[in-house]
Length: 161
Image (cartoon, rainbow, N blue to C red; front, side, top):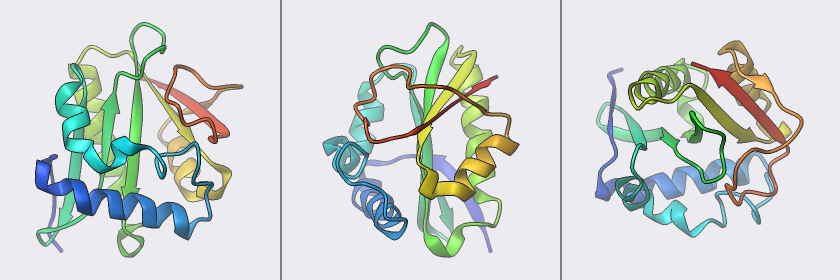
């Protein structure tokens, strides 16, 4: 197994959107008010290319795209905060430490971009991911920060870098 992490490319858009939407269907997460119905899910390369101080990394296993994760300056977040966004992996590749590798890459990139905190939004249905966030040092919040537009999320967390 050869795992690589690289910056997103335009040709990754279609496969990433498929991985994200399949994951949400798999876990029976609401589709309205999530990345499922967000039109930017189909144009992640452009979204990150157009946003200063953002980055998105994809991971490949044996040269096959298996997921990704990014750092995004969501409007309305406190100064020094960015959002850890769109961490999704194919079902077959979860539980192997790849999500942690992607998060570590994002922490390093966020710090390099000058951020002091990372914020994220999630769902109770994604319990394994939430547990991974807790182990990584994310602390629960009582409500949402910023204006992600993903109003269906019910778990909000923050980590100091």
